[in-house]
Length: 272
Ligand SMILES: C[S@@+](CC[C@H](N)C(=O)[O-])C[C@H]1O[C@@H](n2cnc3c(N)ncnc32)[C@H](O)[C@@H]1O
Image (cartoon, rainbow, N blue to C red; front, side, top):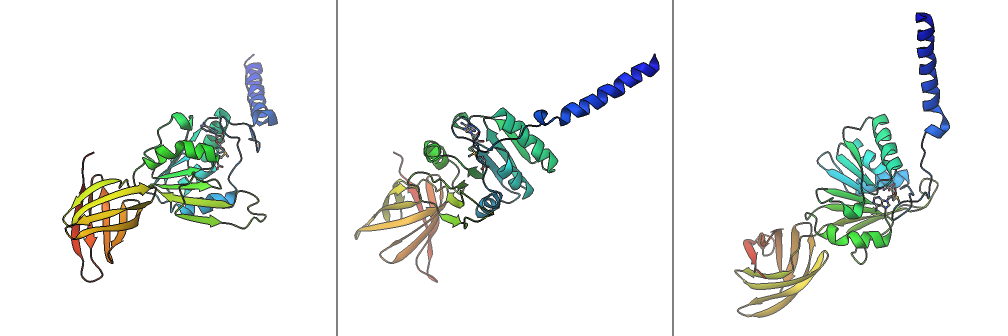
């Protein structure tokens, strides 16, 4: 009787292994399979590295991939030592990604959640990765622009409306990268719109993404200016004099003057 029971156990064990290895039990995603707002098409492996390089991902980063598919961008970021999270609506893809992260030894750093990216908070990321349709990127743009200045957003192939990228890398469409071979990088700019008081006068700025224009009104007149914000760093020139500064909320602090003869300046934004 004991003999029969142990045989039964052994048979159950073997049957268990066989079932786990039946092809129908192993889920494999298919290119072009339906997704909630966009189908699953993976970023080519060579572009995954290009995107991670372009964003300069390090172990200090928290990377979130919006619509993470089979998890490849998240796993690649984790292999660079970053903490990384994939937000994906499809349950099967979430489980598949978790398994891949486990198999590739990065499950402690690469995590995945079933989530609708349009109903999720991803504001804590220091790097966002995207391979979404243009209308999806555009819909998410207000959230992107509200992220901490300096956050890097890197997208495969599709842009974010009229927000021009800070850098782009185009790979030749060869065997290694058949389609979707352009990576774009945006650095979230600080918001500088408004009227700022500074010792030299009153600075009025309007902004379109990383570019701004405006005027500086002083006792001796009003000068027009234009400049650029990269993360929290702002630069402009008025009447041949260079201003550099760092924006922190409603304060800008920096230096004014040309090389060798610069002094500090501070500006405070006027409450609306
Ligand atoms: C083009 S694939 C990109 C996959 C992956 N990021 C990559 O680059 O390889 C887009 C992914 O977004 C997922 N997706 C579509 N709509 C979504 C939504 N509203 N929330 C979360 N994921 C979504 C799809 O299931 C698909 O896996």
